[in-house]
Image (cartoon, rainbow, N blue to C red; front, side, top):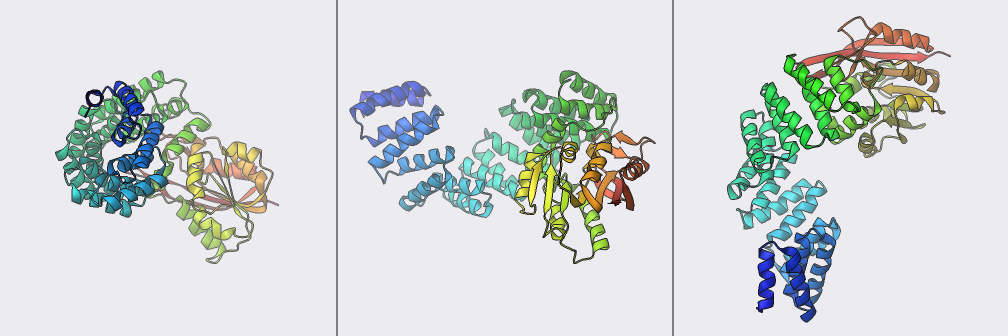
Length: 503
C-alpha cells in the first residue's frame, strides 16, 4: 500500500471524510481501474450522506470487478438507502450467489420485505443472518422490530435484549423493548427501558412521548405531564405532539381533575394561542370556550395522524356505531338488501360502514366524503367506493348538486356542536323518501342542546336533534339509545337516528 493510500485511509478512519475523499479521488486519477479505490470513494460519499454519488461509485467498482463481494454488497446497501428497492434486491441476490453467508445482503433483503410488510419473508432473511452471526446487534434489532409489528411482544423483547447485550448504545433496541413491555402492561419495565433510551438520546421527542404514556398508565400524572410537555417542546410544537398532549390532558381528566392538569392546559393555550388544535382541545379540557364545531385544522390533523392505526384504535374502544347501523339496515331492508340505492357515507373514514353499505349500492354506487386525506387513502385500498371526496361536510353539502337515496354517518357529528347546517345540507341532497341514518353522543352532562366534552367531542340532546330533523323536512323513523364506544373506563352512550325525507 502506497503512502498516499495510507494517508487517505488514515483520514477516513479519523472521520475526515471530505479530506479522505479528496485523496481517494486524486488516487483514482492515477489508477482509475483500482476497485479498492472506487469502493473507498463510494464509502466517503456514503459517510457524507451523498447517496446518489455513493451509488454511482459502487456501480463503477462493480463494473471493474463483477465478482467483488464488497463492491456488490455496498452497492446493494446504497441502492436500498436510496430507495431503489427493485435494483437493491437484484444486487443482493447476486451477492448471495457468490457468498451465501453474507449477512449484509440478507439484512438488505429482509429490510425490503419488511418495507413491503411481508413480515414472514423478512423474518426468514433476518433469521438466516442471525444464525450466521448471533451477536450482530443490527440483526437482533430488525428481528425485534418485526416481531413487534406482528404483535409478538415476548419475541420482540427477547431479541431487543440480545441487541442491547451486544451493543447497549442501540437506542432503537431500548425503544422496542420499552414499547413491547408497554404493550404487555409491564409499565415499570417499560419506564426503565425508555429512561435508558433517553440517556442515549435525550432529544428524541417520541421517547419522551412514550415515557409520558407509561407514567399515565402508572397514574403518575405529574411525570406524565412533564414528559408530554418535553415532547411537545422538543418537536417545536409538531402537530402529532399537539394531538398527543391534548389526549394526555383529556384522558387524565377522566381520572383526575387536579389543579396541575388545568395549569398545563392553560400553559399549553398560552404557549400556542393561534394553534387551532390547541384552542379546541385545551378549551375542551378547561370547558372555557364552546365553539359551534371543531375546526378543520384540528380534524384534519387528528385523523391524518391516526389513519394508519385507526381501526385498531377503534377496536380497542369497542366501537359500536357501524354495527348498530348495520343491524338497523338489516332489520328494515332484510338480509338480502335491494342494490339500487345511491348512498353517501358522510365522514367515511377508513370505510368501516362502507364494508356493509356496498351491498346496498351495487347498481348506483357508494360515495364517500371525509376531511382527512390519509383516512381516504386507507378507504381507497378497500375498493368499496364509486367515488371518494376530500371535503369538510358543511362545505360538501352546500356545494353538492347530485342527490342520494341514503346518507349514513357513524359517529361523525360528535365533531359538530351546531348541526343545523349539516342536517339542512343532508336534506337538500336526499331524494324524496330518502333515508338519513346517523349517530350522535348523548348529552347527559346538562340541559343544553350540545356540550363540548373534555375529549374534544360534542354531546347532543335528543330533543335538539329531533327539532332539527323536523325543521328540515324529515319524518323521524327510529330513535334508539345505544352504546357507541368506550372512553377510558367509561362507556359512551348515544342515539341512533333514522329519518325519512318528506315528499
